[in-house]
Length: 350
Image (cartoon, rainbow, N blue to C red; front, side, top):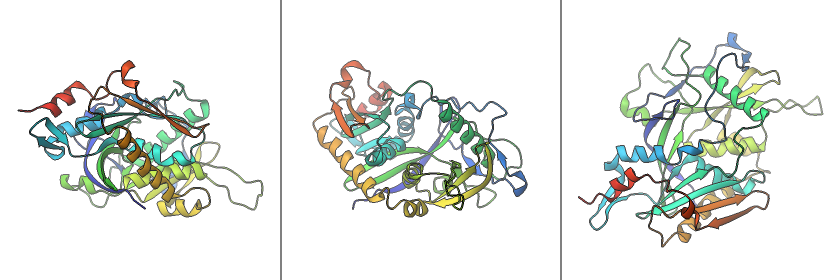
């Protein structure tokens, strides 16, 4: 089986307004509340708007990872004497694209749409809204708000901070990863959780090698049999968390054990291995990785003769039918998601 082998190679930040910053200004640290702070109250008492009305920041497209490549062109470009610069990667995307593909074999309820352009021998992939409503239902909104509050209580903007300064909901610190999957080289960005503080200062050259812990909202579900302990997540949540951590090289997750009242009695530590072992009869990490490998290679084969940033292929997944269909003419009714300034840099032949 071909496994994804990943290595972090850099980082950048996004402000709460989704502006790119070539620094670690939005890096967050784990600041575990003391025993006296429990139960944590996740019922919002102040503005927790995170600017995320949908499942994903679709409007970002690939702007931020392309910004990063632009600011590190010596790392990513190799000179092609005949046609400007080539990016030394087969695929450029975000982590969420890879996660979406990996979870597809077990996705029977949520459609997705991936846009693809091939330009200078590199395939660029990004998610687009497949028709998701502009507002989420009340339960989803409530869960989003509670998870935002949870992260404000567990993450801090400053290392070993004793203040109440916490990250804003839509600000992010992202790692950039270079990964190998069989013969494919993939560059992707991923928002990270909270870094584990191991000393009082973090040197600039060590920021790309921090240990991170994710923090997830678990909702209490009681069993009909009162002798059984309540559960806080199911196989679906476990798969999403496992695939995300797998792509981020993160081993540990804090799961908030949240009561229906919105109060957290404790934070339970789970590992990627725990999630896999608990769900061996429901989903298979091996199948997820195989499907990722097969679909990326299929996209590469379908687009083998394309070399035009304005040509966009649209891969649509219909969950109800468990079918992926291709629209090769998507570029005829939409602008390219690869911006002009990036193309000018790639085509620079001086």
